[in-house]
Length: 572
Image (tube, rainbow, N blue to C red; front, side):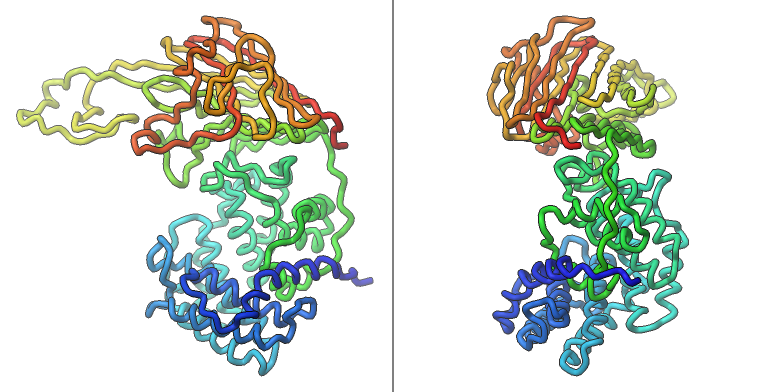
């Protein structure tokens, strides 16, 4: 018996498309001045989909066709003689142009099935795609996900305009192997690029090429993402190597992928994720085109599987652990790239947050640890060890050096020594050739994840330097049991504190096992977050915002911190 269609889903997708397309169709001759090429192509795709869909208010609308042609002329005008598109910070970029060509080719498939009423639109789309084909065939990339976006564009070009050279180029890129690790994470570990680039591109390639292994890669990534979904409906990003590592990422962009694979595989856990992704409503105008291109999306979801709690997951490749229960959701992270590479860089995982805790509406967004050690920045674990079930140790050892005179055979009469970087400072001093006196500093954080929170034991060893533990709470509550020190900051002294939002709360208590007494609220010079010189030398910061509570002092220290979540009505 065939699976029934989910008419409400299709109608919701049509409404989302109409919210974008209807105003464009209302002024079909209005030139889209200043619109980037990717936006122009997406508008064309949405207008064509709305024209073709019986569920859209623009079904069969001549004004939608006119608006599509207006945008196609604007798109053709920003296409350079190479076929690549002008605009953006990536100059003459094959992958950036591939994003646009993917939408152009999808619009071509939708328009080509409409008959003579979309003949002019179909011809304009074919002209734009053909002009770009040569440069995409020979062009290069500069990020991991670009390979799959470019391959998807080549495969779509072949789908509409068959050319074996396009498939040969796809196979050349795919021969490198998909960059997905043993845990199901792509190498960039980014929710944004998984949802918007890698997963949709690999799904397209799996369909065009008949490659079950590419479909399997997407399923593995989606299965892992299930354990990264947070109680607030976002996907964990602290471990990302891209821009989203410092920002929450919504689950909604994963909707079509969870939905499609739930329908095709019958997985109830994917069905639950698809429903969760649509909880806030469907706002993606691109979904309507997807329903026309992939009719399986329109089928009814299988029965969602109930969420099993408590649930634990340790992603060894990203060094990230999560524990979810009815009362709390806690994340521990020790997978920064900074200790190995000794630098802050686009493409590296740099976020120094090592713990988050969700207790309903009370959310501890970030726990970070600053140290005043040679301005090398906050604690970022170089290693993470699982000591037992739900128990982990994070460790980082820093070294800095003072340099001795050069040996006689390394000296120069002209004093012109080579410029060298010694890990924190660059100078014309030939650092590698000099004997060095090292100063070291080690931080260990042991985390015991519990169903109602976490127990921390922080050990700071080395010279006497200031340190500060920063706890950043999401706005909405007030830290009780703390002393305000200005600028949205509070000091936790000897007693417990509570952060309460409505009926939900997080309680924190700190104790000193070894070391000097903790710094009081008069030491705002100690009780602060220091991003380190890689940021401050260029006037930047990666500091958090929100309600920030500090515990600090002068090490060496051994400190215990108890975090407890309490919810008035836990989810079951």
